[in-house]
Amino acid sequence: MAAAADEADLINMSQPRSRSYRRKKAPVAIIALASVVALAALNVMPIGGLAVLGVAAILLLRCIDAEEAWESINGGILVLIFAMLAIGIGLEKTGAVEAS
Image (tube, rainbow, N blue to C red; front, top):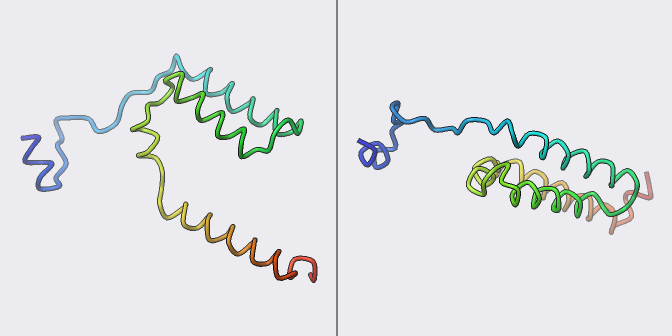
């Protein structure tokens, strides 16, 4: 049944698709989030670097596994973010930001 469902791109109703919450790991995730925000507010590091360290800590401490992390990424949102960054860099380099 599982092979037929995978091959035909059907949903197998007998097997759950999502995993249960890991409530014991919730404090670790909350501490990681609070640490990133607090350290960024104190200008210890840029928030981008702190966010990467926070994600690494969450993955290493098994709050979520790598497969769950990759499944949660939305490609459309990433394209939108990169497009906005490219437009922002273009505005800075042309001087349009300073002109406004």
